[in-house]
Length: 374
Image 1: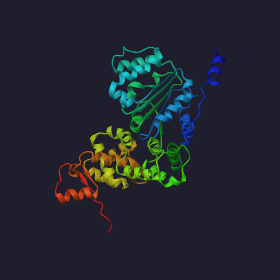
Image 2: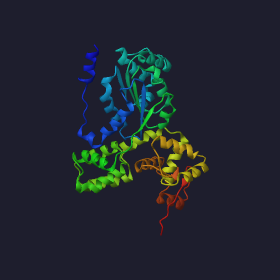
Image 3: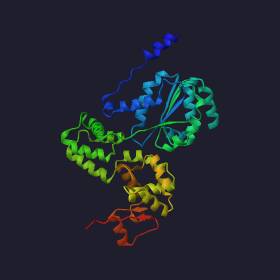
């Protein structure tokens, strides 16, 4: 029997190849990094958390890794969109989905979250499990779905994707962390070109391609969306599209990034909008001091936003991707068509409109006016 198992697992296992599109974005190198962290040859139970901003490719990488190693496990389950499913149907629904592949039947008798957790533990403790929880946004989800290493058999692997680093740090189970970063400029150019031209970067469009890459902050999802939209269009259409995007970000990208913003508390939302409208690129300590004067608890607010991949610290300065900043601007603009009804004012024409017409309201929380040097 041992000889047969050896042949099945090592000789007849599924082959794993990367498509040309995946090779363009060096997805294979990221898979290799995850392979090292997962260490599937080890017999202990390991959990790996993949975190990064929306649209950066966490789910894509995880699915490819899942397909690559799933043949090594007794029980495999990939639970997509945990955040959305939990919000709409509750954690119990996800617990039932975890149990169904094991019991080979539809699960109906799960009474409450904690009862479901006990069933998951009792069914999995002696099995080698590969479990993926994709897009986790609440600590409770981890506690009720992967509460303890003892819930899983020897050699089990748990992969968690999230936009919130704090979840991985706060969970009782030790989780190896893997931050998924944006693409290099060369690979970002290749990705958008593949979707726009089905080929390498077109020299005639190179400067426009670079402008789109900069706009998209090298996020794979955004680059793919833009490339598909631009495919077959002439340079005039590309230029027009770029101008339009700078004025009004595409709804698909906006909704993708908006998920991270929606999970913030009110104070942290205010910190995020203030940084986007007033403080991007400024010294971190100075920004914190200003935010504290506004009773916003600036230090913890910035820390939370960094953990959620909405901000990053470069040297001593607070930074954010242009695309994330444009999302923040759009959130403020959507509060009202009338500038006086918005919480932040940073555009000269809006500020002059309010001051000239004396239309100021209590809705305005901050004004920063950058005058031309002349």
